[in-house]
Image 1 (cartoon, rainbow, N blue to C red):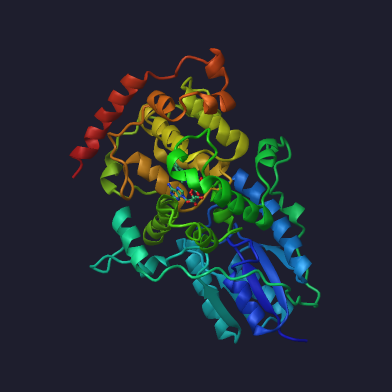
Image 2: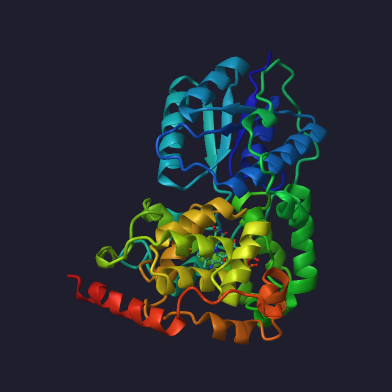
Length: 449
Ligand code: FAD
């Protein structure tokens, strides 16, 4: 029997613009797809609840799409360094192809596997598919990583333009040998008791086909008004492609090309640039989710955690309209508008004086787009401890933010109607007083050596 090619799918749950799949097809041997749920390798961050929900449905969709082309998606669970070699042996594969990952534990796993499989005579190749610019290729004049966004993005834009996306293959010649696969249901990625995913089902259809539809719709209907209304959470004018990019149902090359073909929507492209910058930052600072990038923030005098305040924030019961609306949007639908993410994060860190890491963990658990770089990067940005961060003393005033960006209170009415009907609880903290306390606490950071 022919020695098949394995395509190891990871954060690239798509058939179009998938260089690993393309390479497998070019090798001209039967193809078998593999998805490996790895919660066992050292350093792997367990997925949050909303992410697991998304993954279940996206894998179902990818399995169906592959089957329609003629190939199978096999599911296996365990540490990649054990499972992948075993799968290569099971199938007698002659080659393994994958698209690159960029977090430290994943890079270590992939580098180890690449070396050991090659030693065994297996062809292994990896490709750039999830980022427009490989993190190590973007350097300052002094050859260092960037820590400020604008020069970073300028440097990216001076590099050769991102390549055109690869077309979706018409068919994939599948491997006909017998291979065992886990049953997706046995992975128990979906919540059961209770089933809290009703709001997610209502808002989202995971999978490549729905991702492509949304990209088309966004380009046709919303991109033109993006600059004007991207900050208004009720307008629905941002792309909502973040979970698609997180899971790789779309590649950034597809999004980039679709947008560039519509002119030069600089503002929108620069948001893709922030995603690149977050990953650049994570690549060079693997502990981004736990360690302050600006180490002087280690001196920040966080008071003892007030669990009642944390819970009120998580549940959207702070008595502050914009914060409650955002936190309920997150809880119910697994997503939150960017402006409101900034407001809710600032409220937690600065008005409630709760360590940004507690907020990062909650978002990680609740977001369908929970992203190993964007999430901690953005939390550190709001906290002031991150790369090119908002200065600590910039405390978002949630009431002014609501007046400015939700003047008709449409967003607040949708997610926290109690704030419109007058039934909302009193705010759990005084905005002015708490702001003052935060600025006093910050003095310690300024005094830090
Ligand atoms: P659009 O405005 O349509 O932008 C297009 C794409 O660009 C997005 O899909 C996203 O991939 C990228 N992008 C946009 N804004 C940013 C940004 N500020 N930083 C990095 N990439 C960006 N984004 C995530 O994808 N995952 C997260 O876990 C995440 N956590 C966040 C936590 C906080 C506290 C904050 C303030 C922001 C966070 N973001 C995160 C960034 C941003 O809020 C979302 O990417 C954006 O709201 C997604 O909506 P959209 O797809 O409609 O964005």
